[in-house]
Amino acid sequence: KIIYLATGLTLPRSISHMLGNWLSNFDNNERRVVLVGAAALCWAIWRCRNDIIFKKTKYSSFMQAVFRGIYWLRLWAQLQRKDMIKVLFRRESLALEAVALEI
Image 1 (cartoon, rainbow, N blue to C red):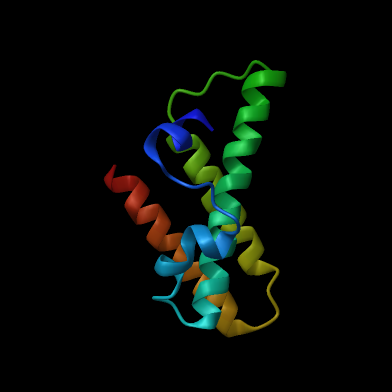
Image 2 (cartoon, rainbow, N blue to C red):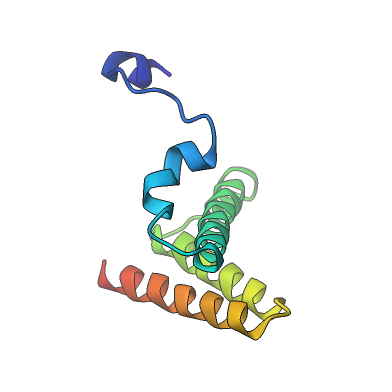
């Protein structure tokens, strides 16, 4: 909160307020997949954080959290009913993996 006050930034009111301009570049189906991908990554970071705090797990790289997010995204893709959505999930997980491997 101090950073927001010092820089004059405002706290985001919602996901659309925070990501609205960026998400407007996608159609509705892609937007949903991108949001699920972001949720998968947040979930993976949260799970890694819990492992570090409660299980005293040592991670050698932040990439482990990224690949955990990719795992969740691919798992959620398999649970989708519509083939088109499955393809979008798969494409997004491959794109995320490609970016992660470039880092």
